[in-house]
Length: 605
Image (cartoon, rainbow, N blue to C red; front, top):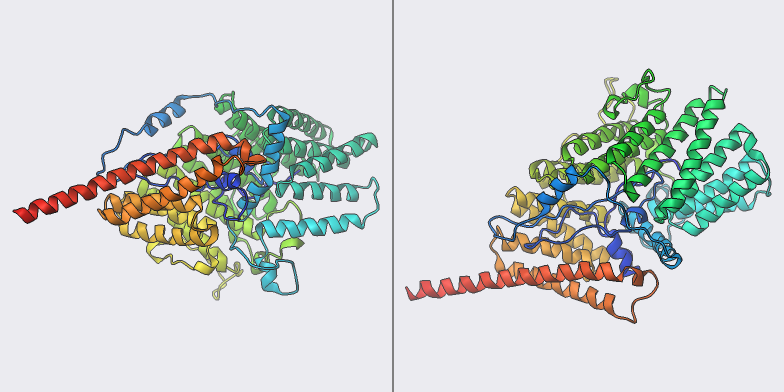
C-alpha cells in the first residue's frame, strides 16, 4: 500500500492555533529543556501511533531528561539507572491499549490535527492562498500539509470524472484517495475507502488475477496501517498477517519474472509494518522484532543485492551508489525507513552506539538519494507528484531527521561533543536545503560535481527569520542545550535566543514551547553565567505560561472532545513543569539573597 516514504520520526513542535491537546502532543522534538531541576519529558502514551504519516514507521521514547548544569548541586539523577534497566530488559514493555469505543473515536479525531503539525514542521508558515497556479515559485513553495491537500483535491476531481467500474484504473484511483486521507490523518475516511475497495474486489472475484491479488494484499496492509495508527493493535495485527500470507502466496505462485522484485518489495513493506506494530504494542523480545526488520530489508533488496539465501545482518546490506541509482526514490526511502526503525528500537533499549551506527547507515543511503537529485527533481510541483511517492522535500528532510536522531542518541549517552556536531549538521542541512536547487551533472572539468557540504559550524549558521521553521527552532534549542554542556554557554544562548524568537513568532508568547525554551535559558543564565536576575525573569515567565496552560486545561468549561481524553496525563505533565519552575525560582532567589548578603559584608569590611 503505502510507499514507505513519508516524514520520519517524531516531529518538531506544532505552531498552528488548534487544540491545546494537540499542541502538547506535537511538542516533542527536543532532548530536554535544560532546567535546573529534572523535567518529565516522557512522551504521551498515544504519541507513538498518532504522529506517523508513514505506514511503516514507529516511534517511541522516553526522551532522556537532563538535569544538572555546571556546578549546581541537584538531587541524584535516575536517568542512568533507567537507561541501564532498559538495556538489560530484553522484552518490550506492553503498551496501554485503548479499549472503549468512545476513547478510540477520540484518538481518531485528534490524529488529523497532530499530523498537520508533523507535516508542517519543515515548512515556512505561509500567509494567504496556497493553491497551485502557473507561477513556478508558488509551485515549489507548496509542500507538506498544503501539498497533500492539493493532491487530495486533484485526486478526488479525477476520480469523480471516472465511471464506476471494476477496472484496475478505477480501483487504483480509490486506493490513491485512501492513501491521501491516511497521510492527512483522516482515519475514518481512509478506512472506509480501503474497506470499500477490498469488498469490491472480493465480491467480484477479481482477486484471482495476479495484479488484483496484489491490490487485495495492499488493501489489507493499508487497513492494518489505519488500525495501528489508531492504537487498535489487535485489528492491525490481523490485517497485516493476512496481507503477509497473501503476498507470500503471490510470490510462491508467480511466474512473472518481471514483477517478482516488486512483489518482494511489497512483502518487505508488510514485514516492516508488522515489526513496527510489534514494537509499539510490546510484550515481545525486542531482538525478535529486530529480526523481522532485517527480513523486511532483505525482501526490499531482493534482486539488488545477492545474499545467497542467507539471512544477512543489516550491516551486511551495503547499498552502493551504482545499486541505488537503479532504485526509485520510493524504494530508497523505504530502505531508509526500515533502518530508521531499527535505530529507534536500539535507542529505546539504550543501545546508543548501535543506534548511531544504524542511523548513519540510513543516512548514507538518504544522502546518496539526495545527491542524485537534479535541478528538475528539486522542482517540487506539489500536487503533480505521484501519490505515495516521496517528494523532493521529503527526501531532503530525511537527511535532517536522521542527523537529529544521531544527535539525540549522543545526547542521551552524554556524548555532548558528538551531539553538538550532529545538531550543527542537522541545522546546517536544514537551512542549506531551502536554497539548494539540485545537482548539476558535472563540473567544468567533466567530473562529477560535489553536491552536499561536509561540515557546518554553529557560529556561522545565521537566523533567517522570515524563512524559519518549527524544526529549526527545535534543532537550535537542542543545539543550545548541548553547547552549554561543553562550556560554550554564550554560543548556546545565541541559539536559544534564535529558537525563542521563532517560537514566539510562530506559536505566540504563551505557547508552552516558549516556556520550555525559557527554562533552558534560565538554567544557563543561573548556572554557568551566574546572571541570576536574567535567570529569574526567564523562570518567572515560564511559570506564568505553565500556570496559564494549567488553568486552561483544568477549566471544566474548556474541556471538550479529545482535549478531555488527555486531561489527566497533561495535567500531571504540566504540574511537573510548574513544580520545577517554582524550585528553580527558589534556587535563584536564594542565590540573589546570598549575593546581597555577601555584598553587605564586603561593604562593612
